[in-house]
Amino acid sequence: MWDRNQMAARAAQELEDGMYVNLGIGIPTLVANYVGDKDITLQSENGMLGMGPFPTENEIDPDLINAGKQTITELARTSYFDSATSFGMIRGGKIAAAILGAMEVAENGDLANWMIPGKLVKGMGGAMDLVAGVGRVVVVMDHTNKHGDSKVLRECTLPLTGKGVVDRIITNLGVLDVVEGGLKIVECADGVTEDELRNATEATIV
Amino acid sequence: MKKVYTTAAEALDGLLFDGMQIAAGGFGLCGIPELLIAAIRDAGTKDLTVASNNAGVDDFGLGLLLQTRQVKKMISSYVGENAEFMRQYLSGELELEFNPQGTLAERMRAGGAGIPGFYTKTGVGTVIAEGKEVKEFDGEDYILERGIVADLAIVKAWKADDTGNLVFRKTARNFNPPAAMCGKICVAEVEEIVPRGSLDPDKIHLPGIYVHRLIQGDHEKRIEQRTIREA
Image (cartoon, rainbow over all chains, first blue to last red; front, side, top):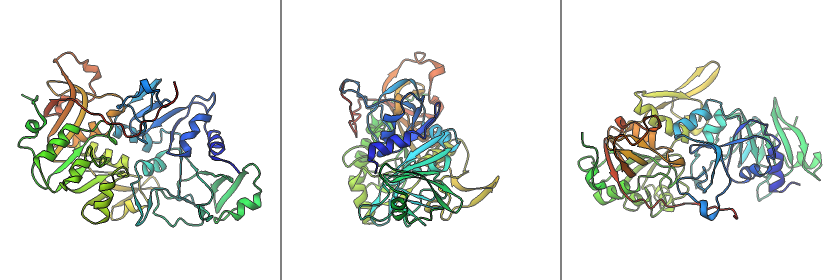
C-alpha cells in the first residue's frame, strides 16, 4: 500500500517536461516535491504561473499566496495576472493537467469533490473550471473512506464537480484509468494484489 | 476631474443605498478593499448583495458586514473560512449563490465589457447548470452564464496615480481588475498615490477609465495561512 508521499511520487510520474500544471490542495500539493529534474511550471489559479516553495520567515509576503491561501514565493519564471485571465487559460485548455483530490470518482469519469449535502457547504472554488478545462485530470485520493467503503464507484452519490472529466485515478492501492465501459487497472501499489484492488473497488473493472 | 478623496467614508459618500449590489476584489484576505469594507460597515447600508470570491473571515474583510447582518446575499465560489457565514447560511438568514471561481471572474469581466451573457463548459452536468440554457457548440455542451453589472465596485491596488491608473502587486491582483470593470462606479483604495507621470504607461494593470474615486491608506494585510520553510 502507498502512503501519502508515495501516492504523490506516483502522481509526479504523470508530469512531463515543459508542462503547465495545476495542483489541488492536500496530497496533490505534495506532488511538487517529486518532479525531480522535469521542467514543470505550477499554476496557482488565484493568478500566478511559476509558483515557488513556501517562504522563509524573512520572505513572507501577504501579497503572495497560493489558491489554498498559504504564503508562497515566486521564481525567476513567475508571472502574475488577474482571475479572469487565470481562468481563461484554464478553460481555454492551456493548462496541460490538473492533479486533484476527490471524495468520490465514478467509472464514467464523474468527479465529486466539493460538497456533502446538509453537512459541508464550503464551495467549489476553482475545481469545476479546472476539471472542465484542463487537458488531463488526475485524481489522487484514498481508495476507501474511513468506514472502509469504496470511493471508486459505479455512480457518484454526492453532487458532481464535473461529468465524465477524470482520466486517471491514483489511490493508496494503485492506478486506474477511465476507459470505455469502466475502469482499467494500470498498476497495483507496492504489496497490493490485483484481487485486493478489485475487492476495494465498487466500480466496474474491465 | 477629481478622483482622489481623503477618507474611505468620503469616497463612498452618495454612492451607498439599501439593497444595492456590490462587487468586491480580493482572494481570501489577499488584496481585499479592507478600508472600504470597514467604511460600508460604519455607514450601515443594508440588504446588500455582494459578489466576491470569498466572504472574509469572522472578524476581517467581508466578515465585518456579515457580523452586522448588512449582507442579504453573497455570490461566491468558496466560503469555507468563515464560521459566521456558515451559521447564517445554514439558519436561512443569508442567501448564497455559489459560482465556480472562473465563472464568477468571467461574469464580472463580461459585465464590464458589455457582454450580457456567455457560454461556458464549466459546471455542465452539475447543480450549477440547473435552470440555465444549454447550447451545443462543435459537439460539446455549454451553459449560459450572465455578466454582472454591479451598482458599486470596491477594489484594492498597490499604487495609483491621481487619474486612477492602477498597479497591483503579486497575487493581490486576483479579482480586483474584473470587479473594478463591472462596477457602474468603482472606488479603489491603494497603498500609495504617486504623481501623474511616475507610473510607466506600459505597466498599468487597470486603466483609470474604470476607476472613479480613489483613496490612499494603511492596510493591515492579514495573512490567512502563514506557511514557512526552514531557512
